[in-house]
Length: 100
Image (cartoon, rainbow, N blue to C red; front, side):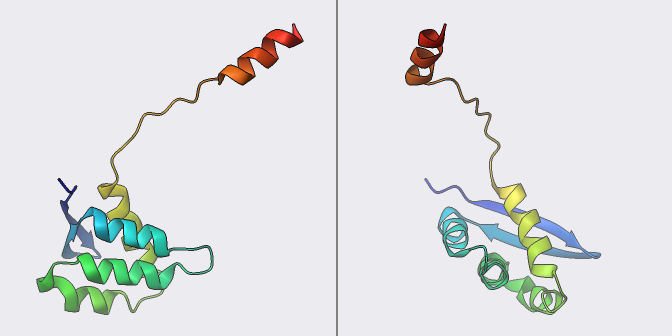
């Protein structure tokens, strides 16, 4: 089952709805690079925005920085939180024991 989520944002007083799924999220993450961020963010947002909000979003995205602010909010809401703790590996434990 694909992880799909409906997300609603209020952007400067305008409500915009997004329908995010794993395929769109993964495509966005895979296309973003250190020197190519804006276009992948814009493409992702336009692909997942509700059809009724496409024109509104397109107008908002004309403003400098809008794509990055909005994509950040959508991705933060979409991604689940993970509680991860890194523990010492066996090789590190042996090295520590040998040092004693």
